[in-house]
Length: 151
Image 1 (cartoon, one colour):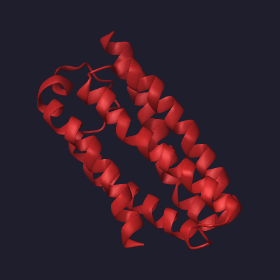
Image 2 (tube, rainbow, N blue to C red; image 1 turned 135 degrees about the horizontal axis):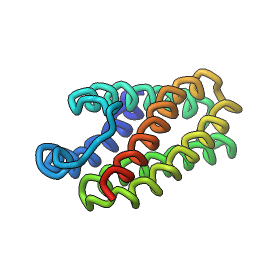
Image 3 (cartoon, rainbow, N blue to C red; image 1 turned 90 degrees about the vertical axis):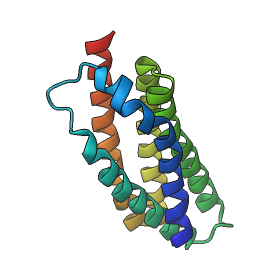
Image 4 (cartoon, rainbow, N blue to C red; image 1 turned 30 degrees about the vertical axis):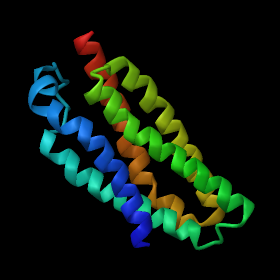
C-alpha cells in the first residue's frame, strides 16, 4: 500500500514543481472568481486525495495484477495520473489556462472511467476515488472561470 500511495504522491510532487514558483507571481496576478479557494487549501486537499488514490490503487492491485481486467484498469489509472500531473505543468508552468481547461476536462472523463473500471473490481476502491472526481470537477469549473476572467 505504501508504494501505491508514494506513486500517487509523486504525481503531486511533479505537478508542484511547476506550481510553486508560479503561485506568488503569475497566479497571484490572475483575476479569480469569488468562489476561488485560498491557495493554502490546495496542498492539504491534494495530499489527502493522492493518499485516497493510492489506497484505491492498492485495493485493485490486490485483486491480481495479472488479471486482464485489473491490468487494464490499472493502465487507465496510470494514464489519469499522468494527466493529473500535466494539468499543473500546463496551467502553472506554461501559463496556458485554455490548454489546462482542455486537459482537465479529459482528466475528469478519465477519472470517471477509472471509477467505472475499479467498481467492477473493488467497490471500495471506486468509492475512494469519488472525492478526487468531485474535486477535479470543481477544479475544471474553476479553471473555466479563471480562463473566462483572464482571456
